[in-house]
Each structure stands twice: as C-alpha cells, then as structure tokens.
Length: 255
Image 1 (cartoon, rainbow, N blue to C red):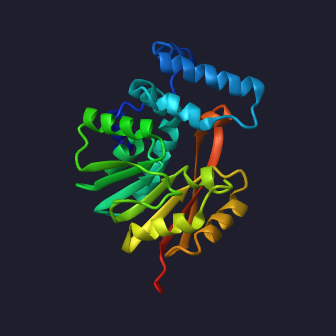
Image 2 (image 1 turned 135 degrees about the horizontal axis):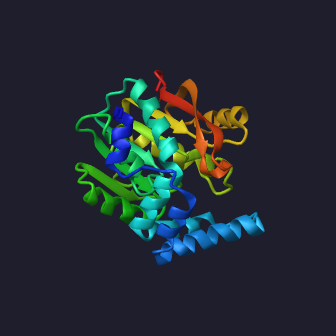
C-alpha cells in the first residue's frame, strides 16, 4: 500500500462502493434516503433548474451520510489530486480550501505536509458543521472552518501559502450573481508574497472556460503560470474516465 492509499484508508475513503452496499448504507439514515430520492428525481425529470444547494444541505446535515457520499463518489478523484499535489514539491505552512464541504479532502491533503495549518470556507452552514465534527472525529488539529460565501467580503480569514479550489470555480464561473470584484478582493486579502492558487475544475469546455477563469481573475494579484490535467473515473460519468483541468496561479511580481 503506497502513501496515498494509506492516507485514504486513514479517513475511510474506500470507494467507490458496490452499488447495493452504498444504497443500503445510505438508506439507514433519513438524510441518506432523502439524498438518494432527490438524485432519482433529478435523473428522471432532468430538471434544468435542479436545486443543488438543497441536495448539498441534505447530504451535509448528517456526517455519516456526508462521509458515505464522499467515500463513494470522491475517493477516485481524491486519489488523483493527492498524487498530483505530492509530485509538486510544495511545502506550505498553511492552506485554505475554497468550498471545503465536509473537510475530508483538506484532511487528506494535510497528511502530505507536516504541521500544516488548515482553513476552509463553505457557503453551507451544514457543511461547516460537518467539517468541524469530522475534524474532531479524526483528531485533526490546527484547523479552522468558516461559514463564508465567496461573493461576500471575507471577515477574519487568515492569509495562507496555498489557496486550493477543487471543483469550486466551475460552480460560480457562469453565475449571474458572481461578483468577481469581491472574489478577487477576497483572494488578494488572504495572500502573502508567495501564495499560489490551484484551481481544479470540471469544465465541459476546458480550453474556453480555463481562459475565462484566467480573465475573471485578472483583477486579482494572480497570474496563471501552469496548466495541467488529471484523469480519473467519475461518478457523474457512470465511472467512465473524465479529465479535470488544473490551473496554477502565482502572485504577479508587479503587484
């Protein structure tokens, strides 16, 4: 068992699970059954205006359900992201995850770097509560999670060495209510002289949308310095292979 596999095992990330086992485990919880029913409705009726925020909150209300969903759906992509980060030779003293969900990816990532300080933000209060409970469960020290919307000015968010945004910007890049002036100000507020921003996204049109993200961040202190990609099996693609672009942004020397 290699280092990445050991990290995943430590946090019970052993998915994807057998379909029947996953359903049986989920249906033991009220929130788990609600989550599955809501997913079925989405798939049957193909809602164009599906309420993903409601789905997200249902999942986050119960930490057991939140862990099951993370294990089943996210383990393959966590494995590839961890392997990518491990190859970059980063050695941060601190990082923040934008859209931290239940904190599980932040916890796994922290195992790559000794004594690193963890921060996370999420718009869902349920997700933040789950992250704090799971931090206690897994005895993760020196971490802080903040109920914060990226479209509102940050309050008391610490400066960090790495800003990590896994599957975050693709959720807001086309939102009409995304305020990129505030978003850029928020990013600038939590940077130091050497901060890097790593964005990993599920873009339907990677080339066009990576360029759009770069344009949206033009008023921040960041400039894109590297572009890469990882591939893995995706729960959203019936476990077919899916590619995810990675953009690395560094502080613009002129700022």
